[in-house]
Image (tube, rainbow, N blue to C red; front, side, top):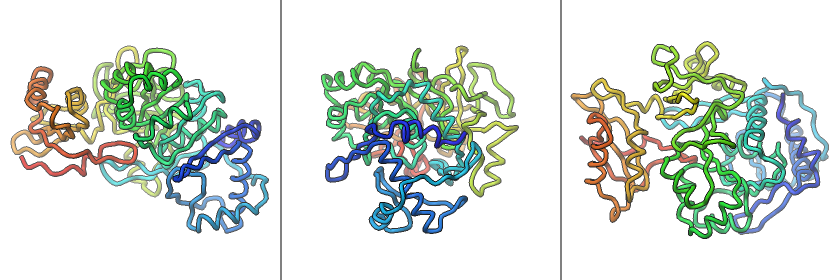
Length: 441
């Protein structure tokens, strides 16, 4: 299946329904129906074809969340010229295997790679999420995620167009404006990253309760959500965050259930279209409760990396995509992630998964951000070092050290606590550990 027939449920069948409102930097809100969007996209497609674009060509987008198109041409001129084009659609043959997007990985541990995502990848993702999360045309989706990433694009925009719900598009998340946005728009859906939910904990309790009463579904992804934030949000908003797990290369793989237990600290159960197994260093499946690399297979997995045959060959084994993430499956199927395989710290022959340490540190008063990385050690090979952003007047390092000693084996104890103003992150909130300042042991 190609993606466009799914969108036609809204673009054509709901042409007169309000679809989108977009606020400019000056505060002006512009509204569009689904029919307006169909007309605008058809006219732009005709203009691009008139300018020589053909099947197989590639357009690069570099823009903030907005309605106006960006290409290699002047934006204002392109928009004005497109308005004069016919509004009928161009018929372009496509099926599930037709490449649709090149989306680059976050590159937190090395060079970014372009995942070739197909029409079928996106269609599968939209069908699954709209069904699993009960998204309908009655929903109101507040969109603050960047649209260059699969979280905002495949989960947000595509589910909106398929379901026919209403969307308010904002250029970026700004915590100072969040209260006004939630009060004015009254969303029932909000997709965010952990850093957004952490800032939302700062809202007054009475306002948070009002927001939570209207918020049918809050979804967190793109980075691990601390269990403490999950619980604090539930207490403050009366709404339980649904955490899920996906990747640029695979879109969505796993999610906590909409109807059922949303277990803090886990990413839930494999989605309907996904086969999942957890394997050891020799590619053999491990028993439940044992850590290993998460492998997935299904129609959500991309067709490979753009012009990187060696990277493609390394990431696939017997049709399975090797995610590079370390996970554990509980006997009832819930998956808990322990970090990237590349983040694994091997100290004196013992395996250390940073997230276990990070979760404990993040529970301590005054800790805003925390990450643990392996640093070279002449005796043990590597030792864990914690980088912290803290409120100095609230953070007690001695108490934190004492807690870690009571909860963790000796080889897991951080060798040092390095304080930083903030952790280097991608636009989606993932910590870029390779950009942390060097530690001199």
